[in-house]
Length: 300
Ligand SMILES: NC(=O)c1ccc[n+]([C@@H]2O[C@H](COP(=O)([O-])OP(=O)(O)OC[C@H]3O[C@@H](n4cnc5c(N)ncnc54)[C@H](O)[C@@H]3O)[C@@H](O)[C@H]2O)c1
Image 1: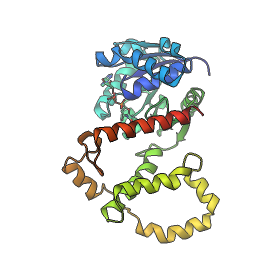
Image 2 (image 1 turned 90 degrees about the vertical axis):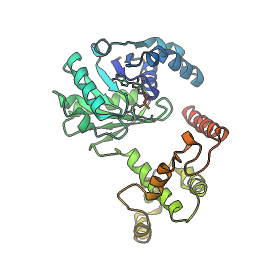
Image 3 (image 1 turned 90 degrees about the horizontal axis):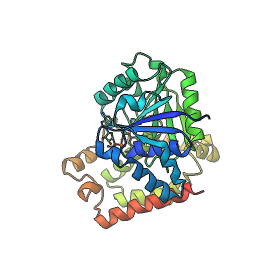
């Protein structure tokens, strides 16, 4: 793909990592943020990540911080937004962005769960808008879900797929703008049952995590669920579903047990207890373990 001019709006956790990936792929990136301190540190954060990963640190020279939104997006071929998860904020931002960009500039939101259709409905040219859902950290987790709305032009999806593919990511085309897209629907279907097992007293929280990590979790990086279903046979999968599906949790709302944890301020790491108790050392150890593992997968 030829070099593109990319603008990233929001220089937080996701925005700086997205800028890093595109700069490393050779694109020119401007990045803007309403908080001066986040913009002031963006280049040093990217340089530190590049150093840590053994990537070419000179890529940071292709990232230009820019305090003014209009100036940051004016020359862009592609704008990706990664500001706070707030619908009115995102809607207002895209209406501002549209006033400053060319008619053919492609506009994307990195929202986690807000429907792309809701964010982009006020645009004058909705065919240029799509969702691109990255996973944290953007420079270590390969997937980017490329989300089509009812208005998105096919050439916009095709361009975004190539953009992410050639930047070393694994883009997945989501053909309908549904809540949770693909990855989070699958992830939270599993979390619902995980919570339900604890709620019913079938096992404790640590056992749920041990079972996942020591069984199908071992195979997941190389064997997706539908590859697995084909491997064992759709007939066996059907036979299992006849027995298991009526027994597993299908409630269409969050679990009362989860609600009670939140009400009791058992919020997980941030309060030292959630499903389990977490000392500061245990929290740091788990975070470090996840990063070490993601880096080892990245090196392959
Ligand atoms: N954190 C994750 O794991 C993750 C994963 C996928 C998607 N997302 C989504 O990405 C988006 C950003 O999340 P994050 O975790 O990077 O948040 P963050 O809080 O780290 O960063 C958000 C940044 O947006 C800036 N900002 C706020 N209003 C702005 C405005 N009007 N103009 C410019 N900048 C503004 C803030 O100053 C901040 O630097 C959210 O929509 C989030 O749901 C997050």
